[in-house]
Image (cartoon, rainbow, N blue to C red; front, side):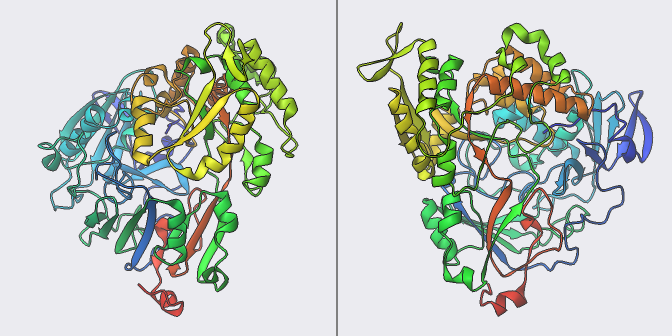
Amino acid sequence: MKIVKNTLVLALAVLVCCVGMSDEVKTKKMHATTLGYVPKYGPGFEHFDYVNPNAPKGGTMRFAVIGGYDTFNPYTAKGDFAAGLSAGGNLYETLMTTAEDDIQSQYGLIAESLEVAEDLSFAIFHLRPEARFSDGTPITAEDVKFSFHTLVDHGHPRYAHYYKNVVNAIVLGPHSIKFEFDGPPNRELPQIVGQVAVFSKAYWEDREFEKTTLDPPVSSGPYKISSFEAGRYVVLERDKDYWGEHLPVNVGTNNFDVLRYDYYLDAEVAVEAFKSGEYDIRLENSSLKWATAYDFPALHEGLVKKELLRHERPTGMQAFIFNIRKTKFQDPRVRRALAYCFDFEWSNEKLFYGQYTRTTSYFENSDMASRGLISEEEYDILIPYKDQLPEEVFTQEYTLPTTDGSGNIRENLRKAVMLLEEAGWTVKDNKLTHEESGEVMEIEFLLGSPGFERIITPFIENLNRVGITASIRTVEQSHYVHRRNNERDFDMLVHVFPQSLSPGNEQRSDWGSEAADQTATDNHIGIKNPVVDEIIEKIVAATTREELIVVCRALDRVLLWNHYVIPAWHINSFRFLWWDKFGRPETRPVYTTGASTWWYDEAKAKQNGLAN
């Protein structure tokens, strides 16, 4: 998440309610912050445009989850947490919240308003006096301070990176808290502290936050855990005494009395369970299943709806990623060579039913994506590092190897062999071997589910043709996460690096050198590149949105031309199915499915024979 600084003129000036003084620094009091230019919703708005403010409450919505869970704490690196519990979701509230049609802005939730110093050295959040935890106790500034320090000191390592420049949290009163910042002036910081999930200090201060737990916690959100069976299901019930039901940011949402999450160990079983009516909505990630698995009577009878919902959110980078901690992957020519062995065009036609577009940017489907030759503005950013960067950054448009889709990729394999030979690898006794070390090139693709096996198998066949011994290892999901996040024990795997419309501090966890040596960060690749580190800091310190876009494009070029991944593919739509027993607002938010605003339509459910 990234908040774009613009000398507090573009986004924050329009939010001004009053101007005050705090520690002799002028502040602006506001109802919202934004990452873009201005927030969509001004002071005094009654509800978001994409909701039905008169949506009825009641009924149940049922979901399917693949895998299992062993904890109700979604904020640590230990264990697999149950669905529906994370911040901004059902169980925990944050100081601010985001509109689904304005994801660059945040609006007051637990915090009624905030003040931001004009020199961006601090922000003060004023809490709603009526805010309560699920046990009825008030939410205070002490709880917010406790929550912040707990996340940084005992939570998932990503929080230490994310809140790196937040140096202090000071309680000013029962309902006011001040966060102090260091480093260059950065309007990102008021917004990222607005994302702090708020826990009950009284509940957690005598418990070990790092440990997994199946004790339903005291919560701050609209739902409470009502029943569960570890690893099989968890049921959330709407809190009838929820303090924030009538806030403008909540009107028309949280409409279901019950949210039920059932767990399945096998994705195929989950598909059949949906078709049998065991759960209500499904977001399909498999092109194969979307094309072939849903030819069933309920769809033809109109009882199930199946739609592609176009969206405008960044798709990020899904890719085959290298663990460059391994000696065999440290030469970029080797990584580039392996990209020539993957035949996307054949895969898209034969395996994906033509549903995908090849990804060519870490910021795909956004204006941060680099395109064409380097621009003058990007050149100015990168030229000081010319001796540390691949020459192609400055001279070529980044492109990926292509084929005619026939499956005959002899020419691409020839180019792969040439690159491998340049890097010191030749075929001896039918095995690709390094001339100096004698290491044989063996690659294991680590998977957490079998879904990608059919995609990687043809890739492996091409790798074998250049002398590489490759295999697939599919393990149980928790084992996969442990090997990927904690042990860093893999050669290659398939991973998605998501992006927001305003990248920022989270880039440190994705690509930063410090994160490469830490467990549970998102730098699974193991990148330790001083140029990348410096450009990330330029992103964090960007002073206008225009500058942010240019610096992100510069980072994109550096990452692409270092060939840290083999880019995969993306689709700019949600593949969505649901049983037709719900009401929906007329307007759908452009960044999400909008399911958070649906409601149980009892008349429709009875008419279709689908009543709860």
